[in-house]
Amino acid sequence: MICYHHTSPPPLPHHADPLRLHLACGLSRKQNQKDPPKFLRLTKQYLPHLARLCLISTFLEDGVRMWFQWSEQSDYISATWNCGWFLASCFVLINLLGQLGGCVLILSRNLVQYACFALFGIIALQTVAYSILWDVKFLMRNLALGGGLLLLLAESRGEGKSMFAGVPSLGESSPKQYMQLGGRVLLVLMFMTLLHFELNLITILQNLVGTALIVLVAVGFKTKLAALTLVLWLAWINLFFNAFWTVPTYKPMHDFLKYDFFQTTSVIGGLLLVVALGPGGVSMDEKKKEW
Image 1 (cartoon, rainbow, N blue to C red):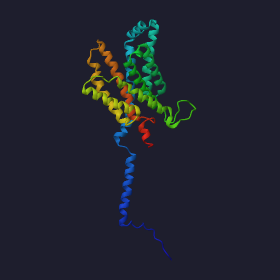
Image 2 (cartoon, rainbow, N blue to C red):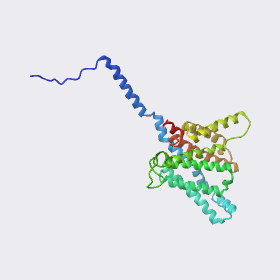
Image 3 (spheres, one colour):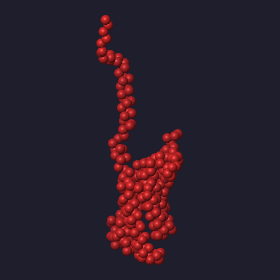
Image 4 (cartoon, helix red, strand yellow):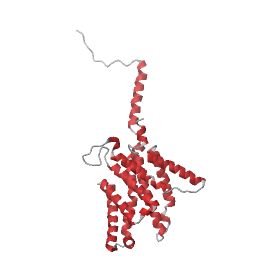
């Protein structure tokens, strides 16, 4: 009678150990590729929240200012447009509720698309009411602010969702990706207002570097690095040149610097969204993946 004994398989020969080691190293490398560093995970988790907070800061500040300067704002609108006290007060009320309500919805991540449309309306209303349409510098800054909202609107949409109900997604040509393109192009208008046309070496170098970064963000090439560099540049400019807290509140310059500070902070928020989410499908960075 033949008996079969259940024994463990014999060990691999000595020449098989390098193969085993190579396979183990390969699996370890794949695992490391799947698991990004903790810093990158934390950045991806918290950066969009910081970007949204920066983006709505100018609306939040302006909504609060409407409350504390109700009479000044309504008197200005009434005198400028000869519309009477009632319509001027309605204008201030719409600005107050529209901006503060939109900020609350965006921060709470509820009805974000409707909040973005409401803030778009506020930008258009103020552009007309305060005659910003005829001031190129302020108009470009308002358009840059609209670009940040466009990026926020794109971020709030699902990857596969279409702009209209019942219409299938178009993949690479989806509306979300064109929103990201439009948002990037509008954001860089902010930097057009920072260029100085002076004939000295430092100013010329600043203009050249700034223009190069603007072009990189607009076309979507090395987008995250270029956007992050612009964030640092804008933050430095904002802290040193728009330091409204150093000017007494009774001086008109205080309000001008405060306006510039929060508008610049909102554009920084839009650029942080680009850093966090990437340039989108309509960009050179995305096209490079197909080459």
